[in-house]
Length: 376
Image 1 (spheres, rainbow, N blue to C red):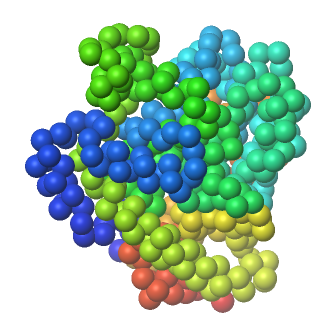
Image 2 (tube, helix red, strand yellow):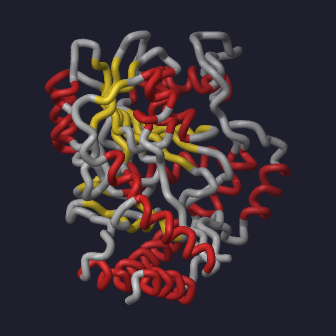
Image 3 (cartoon, rainbow, N blue to C red):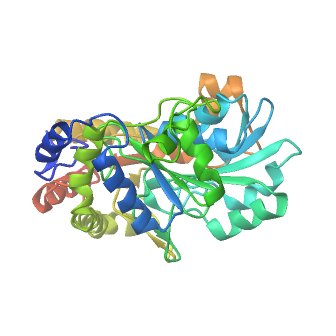
């Protein structure tokens, strides 16, 4: 069986974990945590990067830093993972969902302004499959209405929009290092902070509401409870696992993009024949090969194709159930405007296996089976 995902592994992970153990500092903010944060700051140019226990927790920190309160509204797409909404619902906010674009599966930037009310506090964008939202337009709207912007860039490490790294446009950017992502620490994430004025507050929130970060730097002689917060620090052993991948990050990305391009080339004849739809990557966007998806005619055809692929030894899967149609979405949020594309496109979308170790031969085989299904 060709698995849908295989966590990345470079060969140095266990060596670095052993080093973390030998350093006798396996809790948060050890040597490997600092190396990972420094690397992300270098490649993004952000003011500060704080490694977290998950992208979910990075989003929760962003909600706290945006000062989200009971009754506030945040605008976001419904086609996303639950954490995008959960982080703000936990603060008492109402998620206001707007429709997506059918080409990129990202939030439709032209529908955001109409969803803004006097209670709107933030716009939360999701860069689906590592392909950027239209950030120029979104930042223009945010500036006009004095709104915060949070980027859920869980799938978008090392992706750019007009040459600028994703996660650095909004006030806060959130990365994921879950086992399904291009770079993994099992469970993990990172918060990118654009403006230096938020760094101290973010450190306090991340350190259980204390100024322990200052204590470790020798800036105070004892740390105190300063504000609300939680435990958002990952173990340095997890960071050690992640850092081994950062050392060969370009190699990992190049391998994934190569497989993505191979899929596209092999399946394009099916698109040309009108049988499937392939991903769209706008010219101003550079993606990272995080995901390769295709769209079938409808839900029935997708179900049949998933079953066919499994029979051929290939695990191909669907993706998100739109949040606005889920029980919690109906309870906590609302959909603004018409759902022209969110549900319909989500029911057509099928993800093919994509991971660092995926071989050229395996990709050929997978594409051949898709073509076989369509009689090509």
